[in-house]
Image (cartoon, rainbow, N blue to C red):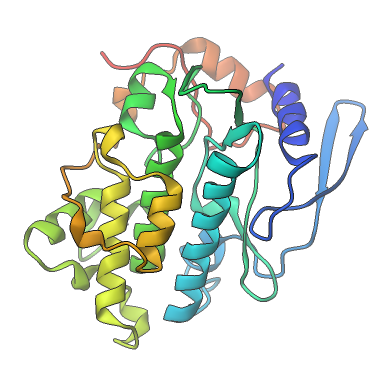
Length: 288
């Protein structure tokens, strides 16, 4: 049962790791068919709810808060990918899995899809699971999972944090749009600053905001090997490494459900588990 596997995977992933920017597992409970994990209460909900959610729920995030959230998530992923042993690939980095405590310190959550990378493993081949818009194209097509799959998700998240726009959205100005493509178009016209969230009312350091968007584009490049490791992405964010030293190639896009043939197995699995998130899509066969 997929929900049971994810429940155990989350317990295994979080039992022995501690980091300021990861949720802390306080306990678990099994009651009949129900499975519960207990975490600290997060006063400011998720990034998806507080920054990207419905207008009545949105909080006003100043630039400092956005910077700190970006750095915190990058720090957590660098820890998972490169410091903790064995290494861990999260596999579902997205705004709804970034929780915010009372001080807006970000906590990466939901490790139900995570994979452990033992010894010198460079990749694993697995069923595809994640969320449309955050899926790295090579992973969506082949099920070939690497740390760079998480890097892609982080790049999308970074674009969302700076722009205040969801990765896939609809509004009167842009109609239906895919944020990665909008950022790439703006980059090519040397106008990335126009993507910065208008609610900031120009109260932000323009050079830093553009740098963050540029790093986001570096992380979502179509060719996985060109994406930076998370430790390098963090150094770019803090300006320890000059982002201008790196060339950016076109992003990879997986923006259409029709490109992902989910099949009956996915549908039956997706409906059988109360633990599996409704935004998860998995399949063994991708493409046409």
